[in-house]
Image (tube, rainbow, N blue to C red; front, side, top):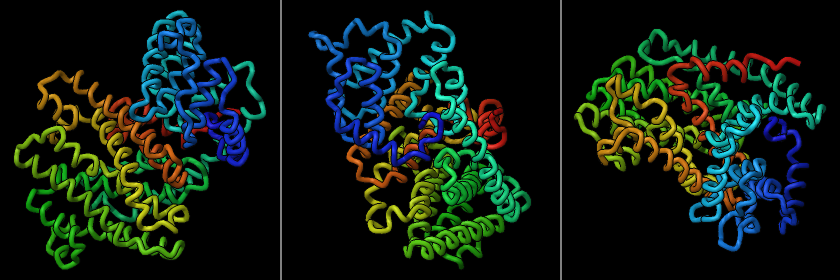
Length: 474
């Protein structure tokens, strides 16, 4: 039901089933596919299950049994389960190596549909996939399964299609907001990426009830993108220093001394900030205004650091770059602001909860930065931007681009382990956990084939059309 995108209709029933599964977790099954699946489902739902349940599939030599090498379903399930690892879980590292190696060995012998499933699992595990795109793909796969439940399949198709008009209405509302800003005239150098950013927002929370999340994130990310353009391609260093100082002090007097385009930008982020703060105060009784302002401040400070590197001709070390770039990517601000939209889940812990969430948001933002850099750094370097993660590592370590990219990919895997570790004891509100994980899943989807925000062509365009515009034939 989760892969079909309809699990949100059955949350209570699914929770009961998982509770029952967790209470029976001596897992009497001797089938690798079953045990690995149960482990993955429970771990993903934040049950503190140990990976030792997979130990029964090891032989006397401490390795996974050779008899499993031809069990394709078991290997697939084990490979997917291995991505639920936290740091130091040796058995899951062994599981990933064993399953991926043997799946690569058998993939050439499989029939076309199964081979495609295996290849996709090896490229992007289920746990890392954007839910809305996975639902669309799995509906097609499930339809070809002779053992499918036709009622569930029909529900998935209908539900997928019924969400389309909801998205389209939200997009219409956002388009009117964007048009009224008149950035096309007043900040003509800036990017208009409303559609792509709204698609990103659907990846954070695709279910109909999260309309406010999608609208808030789209507005925030559109404005953050324009700020990025101001710092990257338009403002002089002197202007950027003044803009950063004005935002840092939230100083209306200082703003009046800025160039016109910067005054327009500050006025727009100020209006957005006040609107969100007032709505949160009205809906939840929380005064979040200082915390929203703080996110604009830290974002602009991160951008001015990169601007100083650029104008000074400086190449930062890899660590210097990462220390700043996980903030300049902007996803931290998005996650913090969405806490205020979904403030029902934090009202009793506010504001201490923001500190509690800090590591979860850090690792999510770090993956967002790394994924962005893997997809866009080459094009941005050609445009004269500062070196990104790949280039900083190449220069500092004297290695090839391939080795640098592999290093960044390994850091992404390690960051996922950190996310798993943060949510292991189920102490955070579910909506906050899902937003953090979905941020990384969506960026993986958008930058897997290049710059999915800067150029919405090819795969990204297909994703947008199928997710928002084109219904499934019934």
